[in-house]
Image 1 (cartoon, rainbow, N blue to C red):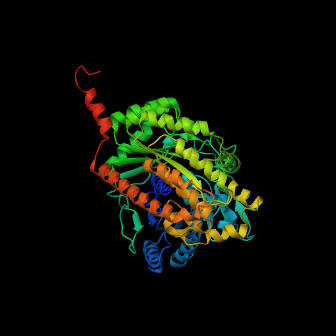
Image 2: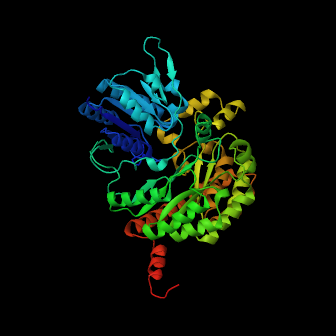
Length: 521
């Protein structure tokens, strides 16, 4: 029997680990998938595909003649793009379209209004099983994780989930390299690996998250998988190091590694082994995400010695009320500040604190507490500022509706805005997110932003004289914010150039060279 030919598509992410894991798993089963990467990610200029780009995708899909199309729908932010692309490709090829990802996992019945099939949850093993059943089109009820319309009755069938895979080392590494890939960029759809020539490689050492923040999908996914095995799982250090070595073989310009774990593994034994082997066998600078309650001094020191260049810490708000009542986060001000002291003492080169602002729950008092916390955090650090998106299926969205902070209609209207407006980041002040209609918010956002700079502290002291009339100082504050942002962008650019030009982390290389000197200790 002829092996079926899958076409797998990812949106707004050339790295797209999920899509690459699915592809490599299908390859291990003897299939030959083709991958489409529909645009890279850039939060400040994310746009829907143009009519011409849609035509390019349709023409190439028709030429490839796949047996089915799998579309990864990871975010509700670009749901309309997924809907339009599904319709266009189905008309072009006449083959069934399967949706997977977070949105279809949480909303399978809604997703089946557009897709022919939905695959819920982690899909590597389920997709392999789906491919085995596709030639006959029978016994769909046996494919765990699958959702579909039953022929004859027209009823929605949602099959049980398979247990979570505990052995992550048993999965092949994400698909990397030329031969089966196309990527959409600037009204062109060239063949090849979109990561070719990149200096950064992204990977994960774990799956799952130990926390249940109200704004994140992990709380809903954990509930969905309750009773299906341990939710937070680690790969072995051996497996992670092996993937990095394999990536270096495929990406000769590789200079930097970014770990995309929800929270980088904090298990003491794991970190000790990783730090030792990474320093000896890799030596490249790397970035991780952390949590204030997971910053053990000995772990961070070992990671810095191994090459830790940057850590992003999610604190989300400096207001204990917002963290506790809105975000379902329990860390205290003291724990956040203690974590900052650990990072400063360990000498982490770049420390970034992630904050979620611009939402209907915050008050001037909450923003003032956020500013005061930022002023107490040891410098140097940077701030990563976001607006809160009330994503479907999250507890914070339900809370907004229950408290009357926003109606369902208002929230839905937010998600119908152009993509450039939905991705809310540090570019608020320049992109017109509407905060200027509320001068008191703009005032506090500007002060919070400036708190990351030493000179900014002097400006904050000036601005807080006469706080009862912030509107008079807004123009000056916004101008200064633009100036500081230009400086920050310049600094980020120079740091990137240094990484591209460099090789091994200089601190690590010095330690390695010293350890090789006879008689050195």
